[in-house]
Length: 319
Length: 319
Image (cartoon, rainbow over all chains, first blue to last red):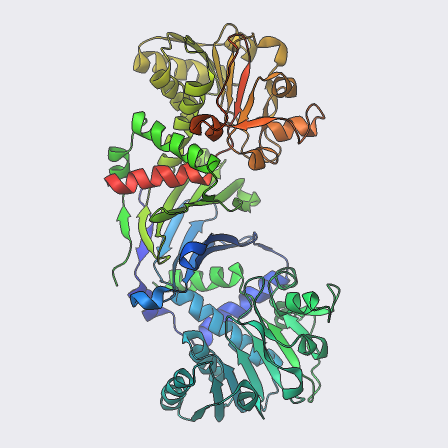
């Protein structure tokens, strides 16, 4: 019996990029979930509180696929002090017929970053105004940078502002992104300044109280909220969830317990019976989007095992 | 950044055996759980029903340990037709300070088999009569054989009977075990015949209704029930759970939902408030066992992530 194929992070970075095929993989992940043929158990969380860390296992099996995937992803907040990235992890690809591990993708969190950024692109592609040409990015970390890059793949972005609690981080990220993307990215002094006039807002922070207030957001704006992936996290004023037309999420089940929706329920602003559309229902066409030009749309992304599964299978096929 | 160390199954089999150190590792796992310093999230199950399989992720972090462990273990019932073992899997050892994967143990389910067999030895060591010299094994698979071998490490077993639904399987296993262990192991024609006069009964089947009836079991017997590791599984007459003095389990929380206790609750024979002792409480000394010579003791083992963690750390240290 031969053991699993082991694929290095270097190889994975060579074969999977933030590009059209990554976006398509994540789009398909959402559509498959909407079509109801995905087995996706609840997230398995190992809380390592004494080191301010946690490791989450997310898994998904698209019934009929030859493989299923389980991912272990760690976020350890003190790693910076050790000169290490906060995030790490790997993905296991199983043979669906035998349960044997077929491939180990030593992606070190890279594929998670890719599928998360690609989800931001999917969100903007389907929900933002086609003429959206400006963006506000809240956060200055790796994912914040990827989110802006992802937007450029689906919209003709000409200008962006970026805000981070530490102004120097925002300036550094803005300078680097200006060079990388070939348009002006400015550091903003406040979240309010960042979002002024932006057609698309992307929030990527681990905030636990609203960073973006309802009254700052003009009609016609699309918001992608990426940060809320655990109970207690929140980036948006709950009034924005109520105001959104429509409020879209990656998974109703998960967003009722982890996402901005959960925070808005807790705040008493909306209920569990809020009419929420899943992004996959829009992609799959079962609930086509009728977006008014001056509507505010919100996409609440908490991160799903099926996204990991689809990006892992892309990596496996190419590695 | 260097990647994880990858340890082959061959190497793991060389360094971890069913012996005193494996028993001690599992004993310590139970004791640590009883002492309350183990973080062990609920089992994460990926049900692959169209191939009659499931993959379970079990994880545990003993607070203060330098590592924590997550295991993926598959059981696919049709693998025999493909000439493959039903069970497979691997274990991930994480650095507790950084969340990085430190070691991948490609054990192919071997360490799970070892920790499960060792748990049977721990059960018999603490709960059976010291003079127990005969055993009945229900089941003829790999784990059934290991369970009898495990008993010989803690009791002076002189005679055993083995029953399996397929008599030929029982005879084959009995013949092989007789040679391997150096005492007579007979194939029994029925479970009732198997348990007659046995001081220790070990059940290792995937049964979904009682295999061992209350009236067959003589006073003074110890029973280890290993098979019930999922809702719906059951090997013992619920009356035995009520009759046990004491009823012992690996985890009250888990056995209320997966084990023989769960089956007995469902049957209406005992309640959720049954006085159950955890094997770790006996090992750790917080609830010392006062066993009457003629009592029936039952140990209900559903399998815990902390067992995987301790056996994985033994393998890591030696590999």
